Amino acid sequence: MAFEPSAKHTVASLRAARGKHKYAMLRVETLAEAAAAEAAGVEMFSVPPAMIMDRRFREVAPNAFAFPGDNFYEIGGTEDFLRWAFPLVKHGADAVYCSGSLATVRALADHAIPVCGHVGLIPSKRTWTGGFRAVGKTLDSAKRVWDQCLALEEAGAFAVEIEVVPDAITAAIAEKTSLFLLSMGGGAAGDAQYLFSDDVLGQNRGHTPRHAKVYADFAAEEDRLQEMRITAMRSFADEVHSGAYPSDDYLVKAETEVALDFRDWLSRQR
Image (tube, rainbow, N blue to C red; front, side, top):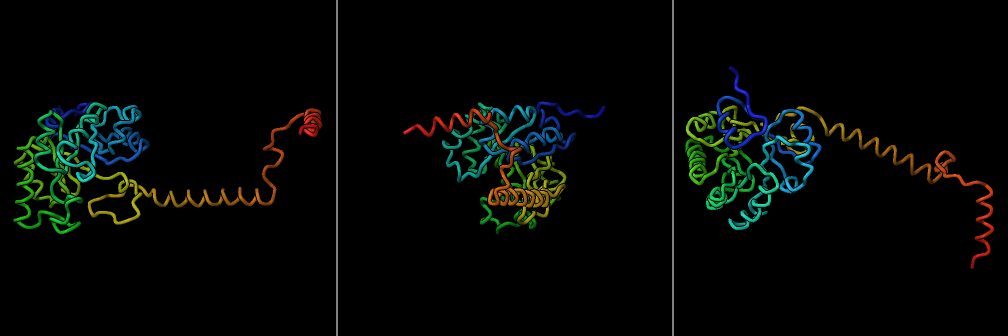
């Protein structure tokens, strides 16, 4: 009998699905993207914290397993993380992303807040691993990725984003860890495959990461729409300048007698 993932995802159901079902995960930045991802069958979302606080989010994405996340330097230390996380969980966050310290991960987990850590290429900590580059291509760096996973597991994290790590290293780690692996360029052994909507939709005009597969060309469509905006606005401005707008079709008319009476009355004012 084929494995059927639950409709409303929980930490328990995600753990039960490991090795049986591959989850799709996207970073969504707008309610329109969230609604589209839900309709498309994407089960897991990374979202801006403000989106969780917006009641409309759960109206458009009632079943998504949602991780609000921000860089640790935007939030602060352990106590700051706790103050940040409690309202998010109250408003429907299923877990929180934390790239902060192990002490912070432990504190969140101690309060039964499902927490996801981060290993491999961590953009906010890239100086320690040599910039925007793969991590784990040497034996020593692969060992460090494993050590970080083990430390997060022991601190109480239930999941980890494993970013730009060689697929063979991720596969070996997957066999040895209980963490739910969110693979962003970490290979097929991840329990979920994680990309940014900007890349999937072709909205990113800058560098597209090697692991990011583009499925649409929103940038070209936005260029086309921008040209339509300019053309329409130019026509409007030209018609205003020439007096062609507003023509009779766009005017609110008054009865001639009313207009004459008003002018007569107005002439006697002041």
